[in-house]
Amino acid sequence: MANFTKWLFAGLGWAIGGPIGALLGYFVGKAFSSDNLIGSGNTAYDSPHRGPYRNTGSQQDINAALMVLIAAVMKVDGNVKRSELDYVKRFLLQNYGEEHGKEMLHVLQQMVERDIPIDQVCNQIKVNTDYNTRYHMVDFLFGLGAADGAFHQSEVNMLRLIAQYLGISTGDYTSIFERHVGHTDNGYSHSSGSSSSRYTKDPYRVLGIESTATDDEVRKAYRRMAMKYHPDRVAGMSEEMQRNAAEQMKEINQAYDVIKSRRPSMK
Image 1 (cartoon, rainbow, N blue to C red):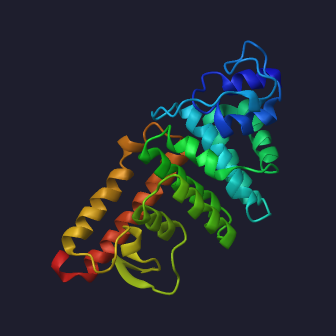
Image 2 (tube, helix red, strand yellow):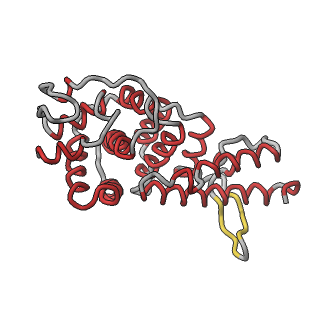
Image 3 (cartoon, rainbow, N blue to C red):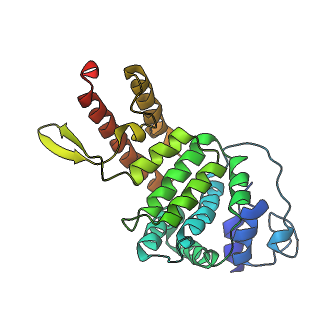
């Protein structure tokens, strides 16, 4: 475990201090040796809070922070599902390799049993990452919630809270929610190529706008959403998050096509 402690925290910056460092440190050893990055305090909770400087953080920082939020979403309905564990396991193995990925999964499983100060964790993330990073973190967490094919209300409430604490705008949250959760009572008939499919989500909400939006507002909303999922914007993120971005871009394109098909002025 000592070697894992050094490996986990080696190279980490802002995630070491604050509630994220405390939660992670609790499970990799209550005491840190003097040659560790965060000093020689007696416990993880002795580690000093880093100043509120702003940067995008390393990918290790972001993944560590994301793991804390993953634990919060997994535990909220009181039933950690196998599908959720498989979803997270794939993420960890892809980003940390077989050995360390399994160790981090073990840490995560224990973290699920511990109280997580969501407001404090989200604040630490917010002051150290840019908006695009936080947006994709919330998008990824919705993917976790959907891993079992259904959303429990407690999961939706937790995800809404996380998005609020991370400063995600109402329009962006609406778009993420609609793409992952959607509605089943407002089907839109929609043709794609030579085949027809039943579109069961509100295409305007997918773009984060109201149905009263003008054609120009629809186009602007589409371009704004498309930019969020442009390969260059997610190139530095994990493979799982990049895969999710590609899937969400398909949803956005489909919603845009539905709107255009229903608006003669946009054809």
